[in-house]
Image 1 (cartoon, rainbow, N blue to C red):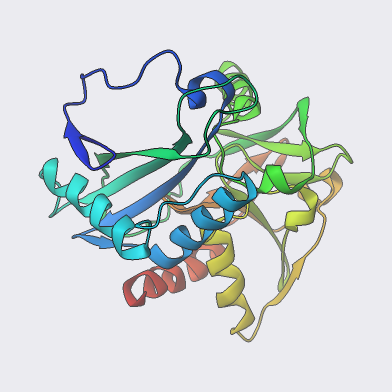
Image 2 (cartoon, rainbow, N blue to C red):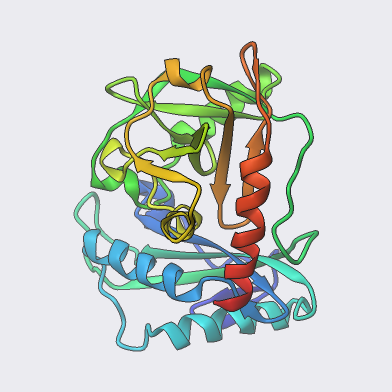
Length: 281
């Protein structure tokens, strides 16, 4: 079942048409959210990011769009799919309503909530082979729009095709200054000794929820030094560890980039702390 504006529809029903602005112009935002046993992980962070993004895109935020409303619609969709006792991936999509060309006729919005079962209730460390390469066909433009989770993800789509065609599990994206920005499906962190780095949002990376949580965790830990700073491709092969973060996987260690192979000791340490934060949130 799919939740469209509070009404539940079967997954094979047709409730959108060719005028949908998300389809026509990518005029849409989405949040990928993990839910376990009817508990929404990092609900406040997802809600605040969505509201901030809607304001930036000049979408009209409905009066009833509270954090409680968001949670209610997510759980209604989980329950309609009989997934209340399972870990679930939610996609909450918001798009501007039909009408207009580039200039919309209205800034009012609609939303869709989708729910799909996940395999594990908490984040686990995948230590299987995970090789990445730089994707250099196109670049991320480092501005505020690139930090939002919009439906304008064509570079991620083409990069994913490139990775699949060449036997990589993922690719790292570069900005116009040839700095490493993020992975195709999440933020990237680099470990060298006790130093942990991740690109700044000023470099054009997604303002990720798990990225934010790890920055908070690292700020309270002794034994690690943390920086938000640019990462050059040259640094990748000098690193001890590289890992990717997103709200569904948590932390994904990178095991190989070109001829360099990496460990996952720090990733495993931080994953335990991330799971603890998820249970407490």
